[in-house]
Image (cartoon, each protein chain N blue to C red):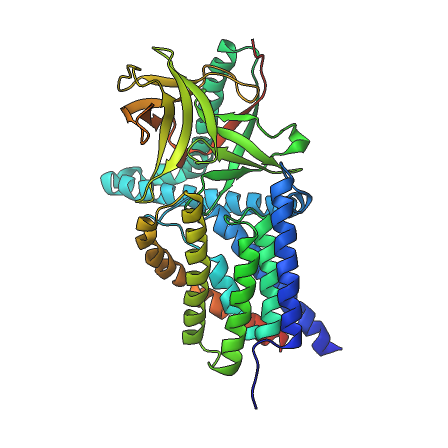
Length: 278
Length: 165
């Protein structure tokens, strides 16, 4: 007896699949921001992500603790009892201290820019794609977040922009992503350009400042800052120039940049929810 | 009545397995890279479940998973709905007609699903100019490393299938 792959029911499923794919594609394309299905899925996933992220952080903390504990014991066995007694305090204090340091730095930033209003959030998950650089945080419209808000570190280094917002979650696309283009200028000379992430053939990501004037004089370690727009304030640090050259067209110059913050070490971020565009 | 209840339980558990995979994929394996690539667990999960479900039920499960994954922020968007459904149906059909539902079959189905999904998403990015064909060397590494998660999904899917039998 011949068993056909395309049975009547399977044909129906494949037709439904095409319809769902087209509807999903159109919904994602025309929604502009966050579509209703995305919001529903994100809202379901957000508490689960928060739970798993908390377990993940705890596991990392224990791993890190055990690692340092082993080396300490090897160095000084006599202090073992004291270390054991302090282990609980140390574990919680380390995280509190890190958080405290970040808030201290943020306070300094707030003093410098009194018009900035910040909202802090922890990173829950990262986009697993090799061709995107984005992460999800556990705060959304319920906390006052909106699309286009700028995410920075406690030191005012730009991380990226909020690109999708749900009720209790938001996606921040980092400056390393190729879909994000940020107007920037070189702080020392004032030359302007557009900063964009680029994925290289070997899979690494770099930051590039495009559309510089061909006669622009660019020096290594020059600071590149935002020029300001309706989405982000001016003067936020994007990165440092590492190299400069003429682009593929030969009519403009580009500079490769080292991002001002290490994306791999991000844990807590701050979203600028309000600022004065003066 | 009891068998009907067991069937609902089985599909609920298959659904929970997929949601858990999405959460682990994004929270735990979202950032770390191994040999320059990120692991891709979603296709492995779908392949291991659909090989136990058959072509039609597998296709429905994969369609639901693809839609959920698409709206959860999958890179490639609606492409995943098509790819996962087709791979799910194919894996179910192949295991119905040609293979025995054993561990080796799950490895083969996972490799097939990974190759199709990751390969076409990669070509999609090449088409958009976000990746170069010269970077294709990373694909076998990604497929190979991701397939290492196959035993976990195979055992989970088999246990759930048994619970629903």
